[in-house]
Length: 270
Image 1 (cartoon, rainbow, N blue to C red):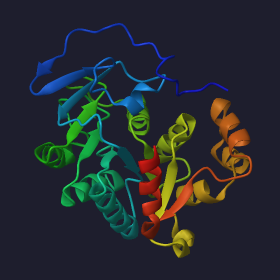
Image 2 (cartoon, one colour):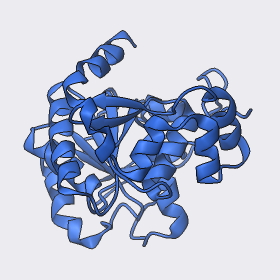
Image 3 (tube, one colour):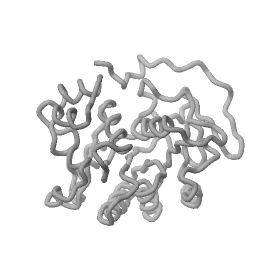
Image 4 (cartoon, rainbow, N blue to C red):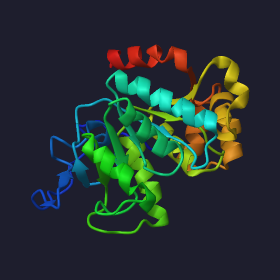
């Protein structure tokens, strides 16, 4: 089965691009730049250049928090509490600046005084959705960062949302799937997380709340790989991964809020 994550000794750096650009406070961080996130550098499909604004801390442990654009009030409250706790522990929170869970992940991190990174599906000089321009400014003012694979002003295309999801998963040590449908953009990010071999978690207030999970979140923590593959109409290497690696177990780990110390201990061992 094809491995999307390669060791640093195997991955070849792309041909060197032009020298770092700095236009309107935009930096171009190339693959061979020491600031390029090491988590993403180990991904075979990593972009050659990341265009950034703000403070990009390449050394920080990163956790991605993803979910639906139409969340429940309970999921919003859980997201805010989750990122606040993770920020207190020194994790940088990564999300996509989208409506719903993404926005709450950024906002909750800012309220906790933490560091957050918004990965954009558009050009680095744009903000999508446009209603989040103020949130993007708050992220920069707080010492956080905006990141895009695209320079200048470029409207997002369908494929750019998928690429954005790849960067979110690729630059993160682990991914939290808060709420989402079985077939959704959040599930695509979860799919890529699994292909990269990164930990995938579904947060809940307590283990008694499993019954209240969204369709997608519940499937991730309850369905074994083969059944999930059928439900998702999985094909290719993703179907192989689900069928064999997760033949006897679910693909995500349920992580109650009061057990977040488990994640903290796991990260400290790495």
